[in-house]
Length: 170
Length: 137
Image (tube, rainbow over all chains, first blue to last red; front, side):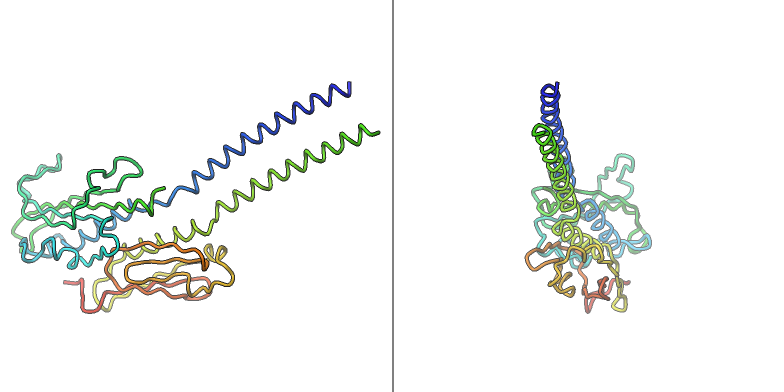
């Protein structure tokens, strides 16, 4: 009787350790996935960049600059908006389009007459934006404003992108 | 008598192994949760985002952001000076909790930034417009 009981105990102990190992693997892999995942801030960063540009080009419902390439263009855009892309030239992208209000279909977010387009260095990864959680994060923002002299209605489209995969994605 | 002693020994070994297993598992969870490297990366990113989201309009404007560092201090090496935890050079935020490890993150807001300890638990980040530039119309 005693021998049988000990045999049963041994079998139970094997099962017990098997259960422990399964639980361990589950907990360790769960915790590793949770804490191993990088803290991805690209979404917030992309929104902050769009907000910064919006504040730069328009204030109080009016444009800060004349709709003229001599005043705002792709070369001076970063400096007049007080943006510094140093050390992250390959990871950040910003583009601003100024459209004539009458040429825009607000519901479809499509405009036909572009008054001006300014952008930073072209990035190859723009095509990959928002495809999955590891892809670069891009944001688009549309808003209405008046020209600097208040005579023309303008629709502004701001498109921003943040790659920085190395710092934000495993 | 010998059989009883054997059963007792086996039970004791079984309990010790279980306790050993549980303590290793708890140790692993504790180490994972408050890892130095994770904290460094998170602090560096959050400070960079704070700077990116700040708005200063003219040269008289100055933003001071106080950061509570108590959580980070728990992981900081004792012999590593608190003055060296946060450093900002150009547009780079560097966060260190020991001599051997560090995390850095870049911000895009073109402003003057300085970081210094406010007391033994807090840091202050001072953000100001660069000289010769104004945002105000």
